Image (cartoon, rainbow, N blue to C red; front, side):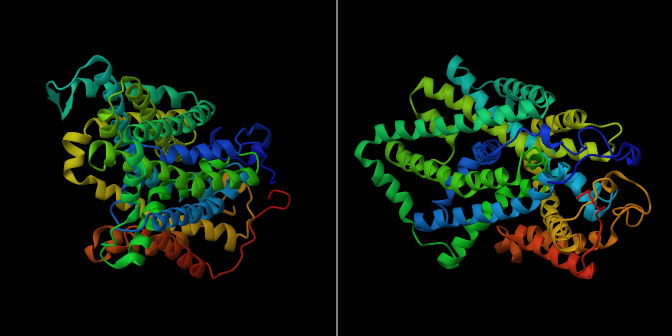
Length: 486
C-alpha cells in the first residue's frame, strides 16, 4: 500500500482541505459489503427497476439473451471501476484530486465541475421521483388525493418533496459514516420488499405465474436490426446506466480497506447483483401480466394495484429509501467533492453538499412544470457524454503514462516545478484529448444518424480519449513519483 501521509509544509492551502486529503489506512472502514451496497443502491431506484423490467419487453430478445447482456454489461462496468478505483484505494484521494494527476492541479476543476453540474441536475430530478413514493404513502394512509396544483404538483406532492429534500440534506450533513450506514440499510431492505412483492404476486397468480413469466421471457424477435443489434443495445443501455459513477468511483473506493475487498464488492455488486435484481423484475412483471392483465414496469403502479395497505406502506418507504440511495451514490457525493475541489480553503464536503442540495431543490421543484418540458436534459446529457473521454484520459495517464506511480505531495502543490503543474496548472495535452474525444461523445447525443450508438457511445468516447491522450503524450512513461511516496 502507498504512503498517504503528507508533509504539511509542501501543501498549498488553495488545493487542500481535510475532506480532499488522503484517507489514512487506519481510518478506512469500508469493506466488500459497503461496496456491494453502493451498487445495490445504484440500481434499486424507481427508474432502475423500470429499466430492468423493460429490457425483457422492449428488445424482442429471449430472456436468456437479455440476462447474458445484463451480465456482460456488469462485467464491463466491473472492469472499468476496478481500474478507476484502484488508485484511490492506494492513495485515499477522491476523483477531483485524482484528476489533477492527468489534467493539472488547476485543470482538474474543469472535469470536476462538469461532473458536478450533471450530478446536481439529476439530484434534483431524483429528489422529485423519491417524493412520489412518499406521496404514494401519504395518499394510501390518509386517503388524500387530487386537489389544486402549483407548478404541476399538488399540496401532497409539495409536502412530500420538501420532506424528502430536508431528509436528504440532514442525512448528508452527517458525513460519510452516516451515508455508509444508510446504504448498508437501504440495499438489503429494498431487496426484501422486492422479493415480498414477487411472492405476493405469485400467490395471487397461482399456477399461472410461470406462464406469465414465460410470456415475458420468450421474446418476440421483432427488434429492428436483428438479435445481435438488440443484444448490443441492451448491453450498452446497462453500461450507460452505470457510467455516471464510473468516473468518480474513487470517491467511494478511497474508504475501502484493501483493493481485494473493493474487487470482491464490485464482483458481487455488479454482474451478480444486477442479474439477480433483473430476475426479480422479470418475475414481478410476469406476475402483473397474470394478475392485472397487463405488463407493468413502474413499481409505483404495481403497488397501487396490490390491495394490501401494509405492503403499500412498506414498499413506499423502501422505494423512497432506494431512490435516496441512488442520489447518495450518483448525485450527492460527487458534486460535494467537486465543489470542495473548486475552492478548498472555503468549501469542504459539508458546504459542497449544502450548495448541491440548495441548487437541486429548484431543479426538482421546477421539474414537472418547466424543466421536463424544455428539453434541458439534452444539455445535461451532453455534459455527461463529454465526461467519457475524461475517464479514458485519467486511466491511460495512471496506468500507461505514469505507470501507477504518483507523488501524493505534488497533488497538493502549486509549485511551477511540480509534477502536476504542467502549464500554469493545466495539462494542455489532456485537454486536447478530452476535446477530441468529446466531439464524438457530443455527436452521439445530437446527431440523429448516430443515435444507434446511444447505448455504448460512452465506452467509445472513453476509448477515444484514451487513444488521443496516449498519442499526444508520446506513449512514454513519465516518472512522477518521489521515491518512497508511491
